[in-house]
Image 1 (cartoon, rainbow, N blue to C red):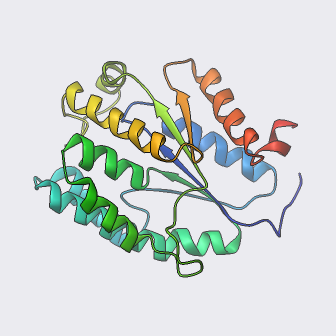
Image 2: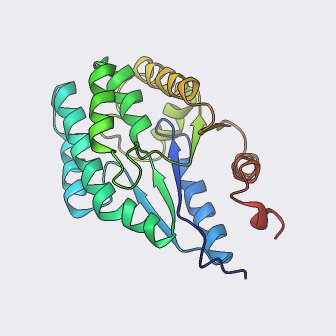
Length: 222
């Protein structure tokens, strides 16, 4: 095992519609980093703190308009950043987050049709970095791209859907387009993963995306 006590924090987000298979690879990547001496924080959005988890329950279950959804998402994100993500990065942890702001643009922006300019303003306020004056974004976003029809079939046999998961494939087609637009706007941050492949092939694509950025070089040699 190699230990890297002085390495800076690393922030990786996992994006994609429900059923794309993110969770399997979050767990695998966390294990890989830990086996090579990195401290790992695994978290999710909305959620990750006691307050944000309460807001998650509201967002996923209670009817509300798109503005309410967006405000609750960013309120949860602010607490998550302050309480979990920023402290973990300051410690030098690898932070693996199941969804981040790209999901808000994809779901509330493109899926719900909410004003993207308002979302960008909220993003600039909530994710303002105290250390650099910029906006906190992941160092890498792994986008698990999957046809909405395939995702729906996977979910049908997996669990009872929440308020979002029960929406139509047409809604999720808009969400997928939202992710595509976010990738086009920031291609250096995104790695598109073809999520319809067998699990091992998807895992190899994840490893390749991180190795290309020298985030996983030592793990690839294991």
